[in-house]
Length: 534
Image (cartoon, rainbow, N blue to C red; front, side, top):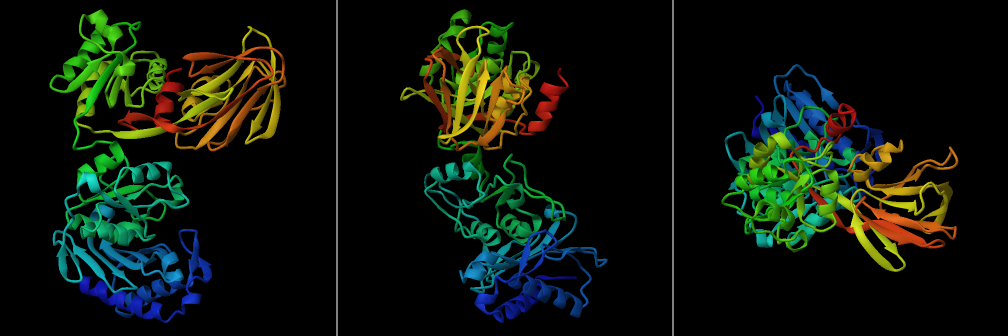
């Protein structure tokens, strides 16, 4: 049976062979690995050293490595191997690169042994299931975080999700070492409070070979690894499955970084109800009953109907707004607050809502125990005649001010003319809005994680006038080139007159719309609410 001592001997072989490679030769690309990425000389040499040790010592264990893939040797256990984690550091002579070795069965949760050696410094981290975690022979533990002075490891490289930068603003200090196994080990030994890995590019997310050893070491030190939805992370034995993750010493650190739950503060809930829906008072009362013992306030309009005290939405000092109504109601609330929102579907489709009207109590219980994640959606800003209009979440529409009167527009992307369109109008849509007005015009819907804007003509004169998509960082300028008035409509809630022969600019806002979600499976939501419901 493979032991920690066995893994240490394997690491000795890797370290010995790696030291033989001249620094300038380490990065030479010599093949393509099983994961489809180029294999550098240092990766190949390190992996060959592991394989040679296993063969020479007749160790019957299967192997999963990013270079060799899965090798079935008829063993009961599998060695999960990252020959060199932090290859770029090794190639550049930066002393943060490791050999990562883990042994177990079936999945990440089945790891029995974990061993990591920093090949530059010789520091060793290791753990055995239910036996604690160690660094250089001394037992290690995660530390108790101070939310007011968090120090985290945070991936903020080329493929980082925008949320990674928002997380950086919430903590006292961040670092990125470019070596996941080592960064998670720093959390395990109490030198850091968390490792946050959130990439917008799936192929850049973590695989089991990257974290198998460090996940066991962290768990044995008292910490845990979660996916971004708050589930304890588990991964199968393959190179295809990938995941973003947050490794923490305490769960409340995850809640603070991902769910915006500050353990130092008590939530204030706001209730906003569309008073025109059926059973508005009944639904509102059910929410109020669930909030007994919590701090909450009620919008003045529904409060007046119910004969209770209320406060206008704009004056609510709430960090979570519970919205009872349809998608239009949710959009109206988002134009008046920066608080997190969760919708109770009092409308028809309710694509943006999270709780159905017959599940209010169950949904509220989950909200109050904070079993949710925060989904950030970007907003769209509009600037007309030097003044910024209110942000929108779904879309901005530029439309003829006269019914059935065609208009002529020029559309510029980053001040470069993209096209001219004769149409009744056009839509500038966010990914959130792509399941709304634009979809009814035949345009595609976009996954909300796509950072893009879509321009969609409305009743275009020419059949070849098509919708097109540009990066979310673009500035889109719409110019009306006729002396005829138009109107700018934001999220179907507010209208602003637009003179003929004038321009309006659209760009991504600095602010985010924050939705409380129980389920972030976008395509299931599309099937249930947009496809199967029709």
